[in-house]
Length: 232
Image (cartoon, rainbow, N blue to C red; front, side, top):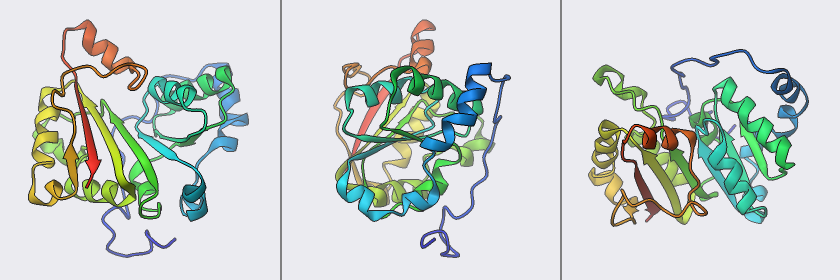
């Protein structure tokens, strides 16, 4: 495993925070875990297959939540391969149900920390990456738990193809400020350029489908910001 075997790789070891499961799975979801998940699991070894990324367009969503956005993107783009990363068991169960309902054949699931998977990807392998409404970890002592850090910005830049896109959305003011801060460092400014003039303008839903977290934010009157960072 060429990347993780590097002793000082910044993403070599990760610790997940928060719950892995909130409530018992429904019977159908349990059956899908037993019968479908293994068939569509995206393994660490598969991530190292350079030929996969040479012959297919691959998009990845980090922390897909209930899977609504990922499912809609897969329906809109049947010729693109999608990888969804989500360690939360109930979220995986929700996406498995949608994959089964729509008979989708272009979604794969990595049910663990996305940062471990990123470390296995070849450089210049993915066209798009989505990070939508991640846990804001609002307490200052928890800032290190946020996905967006200087090392992950570097790693996302590495795995994206030239002119690849990283989409980020948040409804949390503190996380909005964090995104601006992290992408304004001298290091980040030479790696990515933000493309959207008005990040609060809602993109078209057939290009950027809604998630349940955005819908919840709308119900309580909280604005969501939508960033589009292109690899320089």
